Image (cartoon, rainbow, N blue to C red; front, side):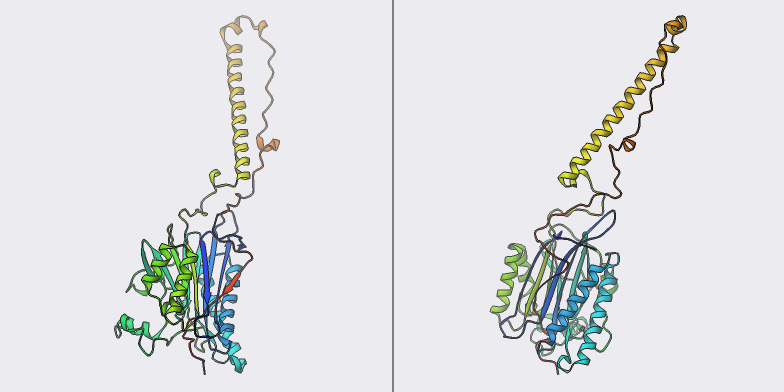
Length: 386
């Protein structure tokens, strides 16, 4: 894919180490691209990773995840988003394990991961651990990722009420993380309703985003202390940047026991459809001028052809009518009109090999291929690994 200077979605991101004094072991990145070819599409990638392990090893693991997955996305063509995310996340897990086993100081390090890839107006996600992805639509909030925790498994099995999960002693026990000795299977369920079957959730991948939809990726440093309805209220009542600041402040006022990282994406009121041929109205000013020149030249050519046909018809009537038969000597000498060259032959119009690339406005500039940003880490990582 081709790096883009601007994203086609509105982007805001914020990270904070929290109030416990621990290292910030979260990492995140946001990058904008466009696909190649005759019908380019805008692409936006976002990822949040929460490091596990302490002694700076957790932040190393999180950084490895962000870099590995980000570079894989940048090198892809967006044709198979889920495959790209799955394979790169699995590769990052193996790389973390190799480093952890080869260096005693990194033993036990790992990371969570929440990633989102928006191709045009379609959303694809993949995740591991308890960093979350939310969708806000029509005044409602839905967690579309599923926590890989002991608590979530107990809730799904009907053994624990969600209201009692916060105080449960196993509240921070995660069941799946990157760097595990067991092969890691990234989760690609995109759950749009509580109790939705895994099969149904899988088919939701490629979800069509609507104008004003919002996506939030965050670490559990936020969700441990701030309720879903509070997240929704902030993101839908104040500008994104201010909303993220307010949410971090709320988490810190309630203890801030962990790193806090948030990446928010908002679909603008009008999202260009980059899968359709570019219309004149959607072209930049310079391209519009060229297009109108082509139209005018085409009309002139059509007018010349029509005048030639009318003149030929009139000449035919004059030479074949009664007067022409009666007085053939009065007929002027007949000369064939020269063939009119096409505009392409004269060089007046040059047919482009591919349609001009459409540029899309956005509120956030993203210089460079990958824009790593400061980050935070939630816990299963709250304790130092043995």
